[in-house]
Length: 294
Image 1 (cartoon, rainbow, N blue to C red):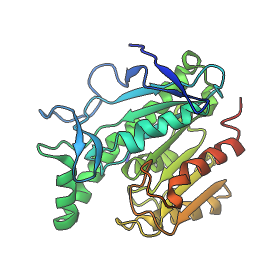
Image 2: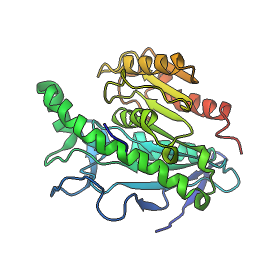
Image 3: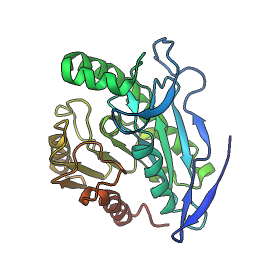
């Protein structure tokens, strides 16, 4: 493992500002470093297997910006890493909807399309097939892609910190969050950042990723927020518990919400159970930590 256009439409809903996507930023000038050659074009489509909108075959990472209304801008920002088994990105439930929620509360949000494992067929169906039939192959593919995806996460933080003034945020108030595979990217970033890519906070939500037990918690590690469900269908709940224990053993601030039900990938999709409110708990934590305060 190693380190790692402006269109604005804002409307009012329930007296809270909701902003749609604005800038789309190319994370790297030209081809992303280390990306292997491949011919599969980036695609966005509705996945029947996952019942949500997804993006696949990302080779040129981008940041899509969601700005808050100027009157509520807290001066904080977050990089959002959707999940999808490193083969796809759950771009709505774990991306744009999260960004809209946080932008409405004063945080500038950047949805990161990080590099993915190239697939010639439906990425979500392929992931399911490999999960059922060849997990060793799937794990090998994930480990290779996680290097590139983590580099993209680190580059995204460094970019936003460098251009913070352009977005009305403070360089030391830029955090990162991610879901499932994106949670794995977030976790990897949390252990491997450099001064220029240090996140102000980290929020892995039902994270996957690599075995981090041999990693050392950084001396200046940021506060961590975690949320997962005990009945996670991929068996990932223990990852959140282990991260919480590692962070607190290092005497770093951490908050863990472990729900009895919710499965894997609940994101912003309503299920009429307590996991529907995880994002409210996250906003409360951000407020307590000072990131939603001007």
